[in-house]
Length: 86
Image (cartoon, rainbow, N blue to C red; front, side, top):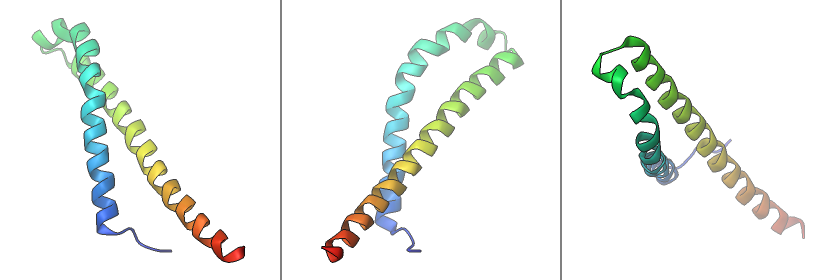
């Protein structure tokens, strides 16, 4: 199995960071206002709820991006192999 190149790893990392930034802008706008009272009161349940929401989004985002990059590489490899078969 071939290792990922450094450029590919950097591209995936940068894509993940930019997408995360863009994804969390509306999340901050729509989700955080519901928790303002709990944040002002330093409520532990509120902090845990916010952490669970952000962590769930981050896990789904990272998993999806990773699978997309792996499948993108697999598709490219399959296309190169089919050139030799024809």
